[in-house]
Image 1 (cartoon, rainbow, N blue to C red):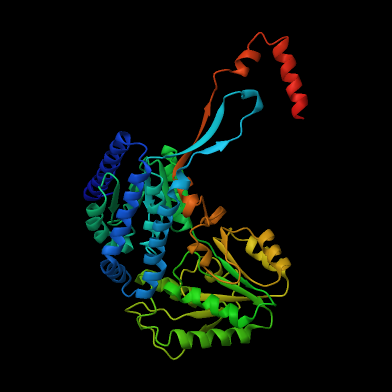
Image 2 (cartoon, rainbow, N blue to C red):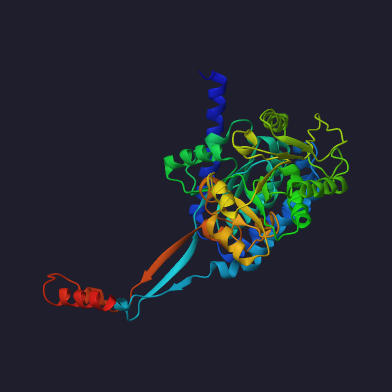
Amino acid sequence: MSSPQTLATAESTAAEFAESLARQRTACAANPVPGRAERIADLRALERLLKENREALIGAINRDYGQRSEFETLFGEYWIALQAISGAIRQLRRWMRPQTRAIDFLLYPGASNRVIPQPLGVVGVIVPWNFPLNLSFIPLAAILAAGNRAMVKMSENSEALAQLLMELSPRYLPEEKLKFFSDGGGRGPAFSALPFDHLLFTGSGATGRAVMASASRHLTPVTLELGGKSPAIVAPDCPLGTAAERIIWAKLFNAGQICTTVDHVYIPAGAEAEFIGHCQRLVAVRVPDINGPDYTSIIDARAYDRLDDTLRDAQQKGATLINLAAGQTPDSERRKFPPHLVLGATDDMIVMQREIFGPILPVLTYRDQQAVADQINSRGRPLAIYPFTYDRELLQFYLTHIMSGGVSVNDTLLHVVQHDLPFGGVGASGMGHYHGREGFNTFSKLRPVFHQGRFSMIQKLFQPPYAGRPMQVLKFLIRYRS
């Protein structure tokens, strides 16, 4: 049974959220369709927030992580968010332009069809801890470009950043337009239960299901960006050194704490020793000291212990572990987890059952491309696949036979940072898209508008009684159309 204090806290949280939503709805009712100039001004304000507070934002993320590579924050979050905002500013005129659609010939003369993108209203955003700046500001670029208002709840593991954004945001945009919230510990369910006009959630599949169930009470449409076990597939024609370089880069970036990172890799049978050698050399050169500033900490002790337990489970069930930072001493206090390869992983191991979300890479071997496709398809659809091949026919096989949210061919992660490509999952890895034009469309109502001319043929021809001319015309049209 919940304590009186817990109930009071929950009621206070719900009231805080509801009050903010009411204020934004009132502002939306007073100005339901902001013009292009106002939207550009909002995006410029968002841009200034980033540019004028860069060091403070980087510092807050670093404190939340314990130690986060400054380069990874700048590249994976700050720069990419700025690119999304500037892209929205450049493209906004074209995105806002009404679309002309074809008219059924019976409705001539003088009729017209248009699709007009209009704001939905108030959009809720639930942000995870792994890329908190990226995954709040990139959606905000699309949300504000579409003319909406936004409420953004940060993760409990992003407390320093949340407090900073709560302080900074009102200096750039009024709270009736944009408001940030800290999690404060367990405030997610109350936030997702609000009757938003749209809700974007990024996080785990288990939490995504709960968010969707909560949103369904109000029939709130949701975009879910979840995870999944995204595989890389190295074909026999691809140089192993090239594949290893690009896969290890993804696995080291943010210490593997990326929803689209390579979860496991398939390599041709017999290539294990060569692949391992490449990985060992790459880590020795690129991360000579995992306790240094270029290698990011695991987010908290619970995640660190989970990764440790995952390796122990695999070893106990017969897998071979290879520490790619051999000779280095991991710092468990700072949560620096050494990158590992796992050889001989089987389906009964945790490492093959759950999304890893860390610097552990199971290495699987294969002899037949169909077997690879079958094994991947036996699990939930992944957020990404990474085929490494220069054989067009083989590439087409994998694109045809394996469904995923997105694809990078002969590289990893980079489809996510292409702002003119939609980003989103499918099946177990999520639903809906955003980034670029697709983000603008997701956070807009693409409203169909039919405009009748001065003369209406339907009204002339299809009035009852239907016997006689109305039925004759309809039968003629059916024959004509078929």
